[in-house]
Image (cartoon, rainbow, N blue to C red; front, top):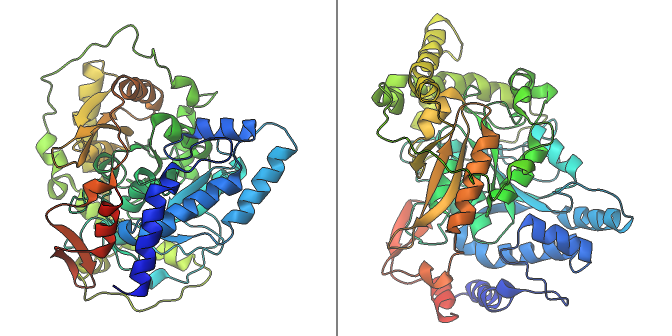
Length: 495
């Protein structure tokens, strides 16, 4: 074992045996704490933002060599934490996210020392013109930008052979519950980091399933908001008619705290955010965190079906795959043209290839009559299918296992919330998704919060679960099986 490997293993053992249960001098435990817990600790002066950030830096240094969930840590985050502590020391009223660190998926732009690379070497060193719309709102709330999370490179639009959670910069992201288990993507690092206690909350993005799926696979909560509820400006796009930004956290409460700060109008995504701003409740979304939200009971309506479901779920039939190709070219070109500076480094194109990007490049990249027809087809499938089902049966929400319904929600810009529901025999988590019509976040929050409080299904990953008869290591050529890994052996022996 090299000295570096030994040092990483030693840090990991110390983290699991000591910092995994870190408490400050006043016995406040950071591990698995919620935003409410942390804000109370700030108020009680038993915790500072600096101590909180230092804890997560230690967690990242120790566990990220294994989990590969974080691309980089913001070099200014401790200064941000000190500023937050200074502001609180003067007294006053602050948002729920003030002084709270948050990790951003690497396709969400930040005008600072961090890269915005989409997990690709091709964009490392590029300079964005401004903070993404949601980042600007987070900074205004007093949140601390912790760094960038890994992701399935180019939002899984580079190659169909690309494994979920793989990007050139970090390699293969690993599911903390089961190393050979699929972490899912493309917001893989955002979910892995939260469930592995490398951060308290994160932002992911979704075109179709990229928040709901990794949340289900990593036993965390995630909200895929109504299209346009949160700005997409400054986000490396795939298809603006499908793209959303949403929060990921361990609890429904935590993701609602983030949601309250990132919704609303943005002049750089004016059409979408203006069309959805009327959905935002006057006093925000926290008011819908009601333990008795379903006190009057719920009527379960089953044996319903969507007549056109086979067409909806088949991207080739629905038109979704066509939209992603022709819109990707135009929207991605527009993003790149808007960069202040771009430094193109050598990409690992021999690894897995890039046939999906090539297919997008071969399109005209223009929205003509044929493309409009495809978009209209998707809107009709949504209206005749899911919308009609919900309205005809007077439904508040539809409940589905894992992220199986993500495509139905995607093509209509509808919201969904994923909540931990249980675990497979091998330890791999499974979530449950509550989906509804556009603007139905208040009701979905009520239902998902009630489900969460009744079941309390989430359990943090036990690191002895990381060792199985076989697990994977990642090399430049891809994923290969291995029977020994000193890093994992050290984790196991420490438990």
